[in-house]
Image (cartoon, rainbow, N blue to C red; front, side):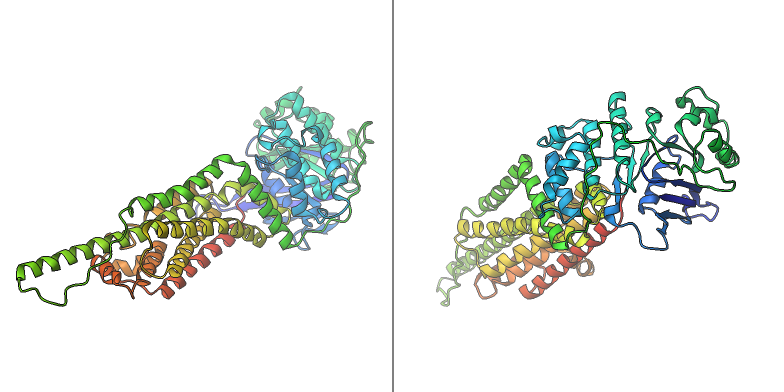
Length: 589
């Protein structure tokens, strides 16, 4: 049984002025819903329907009042187990490139321990059958109709056989036939399970007769909660669609006060709920028997969350499946993997000519000796510029690939992530799967870049192991930071723009081309990953004749490889910390 007692929710008003009073989104909402019951929450846009649903789920916490489930206070005592709660949001909660069956199976693997048991297939078949998706099991999510995606959203929540199923606008925006079918499905789901309560928030007033009770919200107040047959009588209208117009004729406070006065008499008149004076509970009567033809309820074993490791590897398996099926992304990564090293090679086709040592013997002809010295100095400048430029170009292109890999990785699937967190997904498992997935690209792209350029140039000066390690660390640092940006951004577009800006500043602020003022350099260089990889790689050439050539064209102080590597590791740590904080923070729409 679900009970609400005087639930209120206040949020800060707009602006910082003391005159801006807090906004009360929910005001003194009280109701009770018994087991095996289908409830519709209706009302005009902005009346608090979705807000109330989010308070029930725990996404938002009420500022006053209490919520109880099966006699347990959800605020003071332990919240509902993730397996007891099913929440179907307005938006699609499945990946377009997975099939219907794969989506449900993945949800089961992330939220239950059934994946390796004999119960897995029977439970999966039951969910497909009861939601009417058996014939669509092999169909990709992206080709489903609106009504079919709503069915899939319900199927994803049934994997734990929840006793409280909350649906936000799952019947809205559909054609009348599809809306009626989804409503009947909700009614079916509300039966059979001995404790289940199904709540559907909807703007539509069609198919109300299929619900056990209707709750009408207006400006955050409860203005009616009773049987569908009494709705038009109470509001004095001929059709349910006229209720919204009728609400505008009085204030929300007046409607709430009116309902509190008349509630008990209406329950008595329409034989609905308790008749005891002073009670605020409603609808404790048992609903009608389940209709003929309804699929018998499948008995699930006790649901327990899988381990973090199981969740991690299921997320990783799913991510690689999605990547393989996204042909445009596959070809883009292949193009970058092969094309960017070729771009570096274009600038090194002539190779790196060895520096000629200055003559230890002075020619009797002073003019010839000066000409030799001038030629040597010119070769030094050319060689130094070419080496410095090739190293920096490698680093910048590697960071560009890293940005492309990570910028949208979390932001693009943020809403699905929020739903899966509500279902018990461990944020550490999620971040771990991203590290393993993106780490593959970090190694492949940076190592291939380094080896390919080495082959084309015949071997750049310096320690190859150090140069490869710094390339890998630069790629990992940019990947981690862009992943952090993706985790804290509200949209993939914002994450992409910020990541592009970050890469764009790498070259001009590195000091490799233009020297920064001393006072600015101390503040900027610690933030520029490209500087540390470039500088450490050049310093690895200290034992070669090319180091002096590089110093001739580099006004910026070069850093030892060990310090450069340490700073890049700090960048990685900061990026991953941002990612974890962003994933843990709730970003529901």
